[in-house]
Length: 65
Image (cartoon, rainbow, N blue to C red; front, side, top):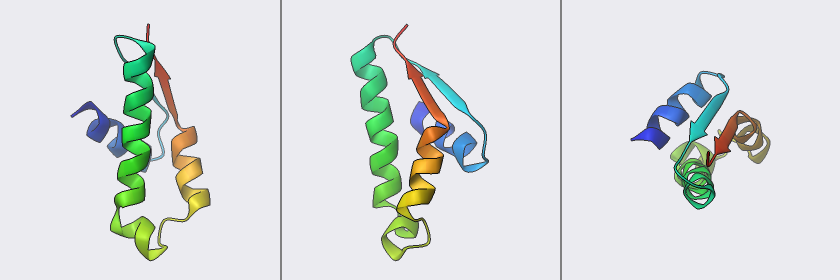
């Protein structure tokens, strides 16, 4: 659920800080979000470019503290 909320904020252009219980979980959340974007029809059809994806992922910061 947290990843979906983070993606909603990212899609709105807002920076997001996801705080997880440890660094491994934080990294996994980041990977999950990126993989979800890559699996989207927008990405597969080219409506969401690799550059757009990078811009979105740059809005995401994770912390394991």
